[in-house]
Length: 336
Ligand code: KG4
Ligand code: ZN
Image (spheres, rainbow, N blue to C red):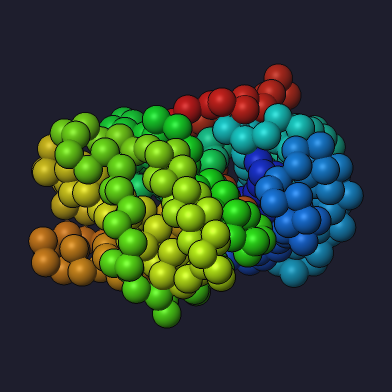
């Protein structure tokens, strides 16, 4: 099966990514061109800029990925072209989808549009053998979703956020603290040397019996705290980061616990940029060990946006009989 090569393209947000995968798991090429430096000056992703940069990066990235994988004759060697068709920024998605359609048409290789969230779920399957059913937490800059995967392709959305995504809250707090974009990695690092109980920030929706998240109230509380502390002098940044992070992690863990309880499914996967967070990873490992839950934590590199996960999802979906044609169009709000 490793002889079946999938070429995948991911452009849903601010990373241009191309990967080649042999079969379900053999990574032949994994190329990413990050736009972080260009967006960080604005404190977040500027959609118009993102589309333009995808367009510039795409063909050189494709060429180098094909070379890295040793693919000389794509028409003969590729089995599938998988591309993220949503959810994401429309202008960004369009660059990937149009490129994939052109290549599919030019090379005569089958085309498949992949859901970005299903891609994140496959970040785990691309790393090691993963068998459904399982519960998947997808936490990134755009998503906070708890999904029940009964089988590959058979997903139920158990819960999501009422407002901001978890990563979005990290990014906004970082911006207010003047720590730049993206906020997750820097807050994660600073929190390590702070006191998580220095400030009593509220754990969002802690007492509801629903699988749901809300990070907007926590964000406002943290911003008010930062303002107050700044008036008194230099704010204790590490303590603020640690206290904020504790509230986020507690909220995620509470609702994951609820999902495990209500479904009875004791296999758990996590992905998305926030899954790279040290405190969240530690909390999940502790919880899983205590409750005998099988935990799949992909390597940090696989947590953030990449094309390997899109290739893995695309390959699995194609083998289940799914296929797109040239009418494929991006769907910015495609749900799982
Ligand atoms: O999955 P991703 O690369 O892109 C989206 O699909 O959004 O996730 C990026 C998000 C950003 O909000 C970033 O701040 C957050 O993931 N992030 C983290 C960490 N690394 C990245 N959040 C918390 N801790 C981290 N270590
Ligand atoms: Zn993502």
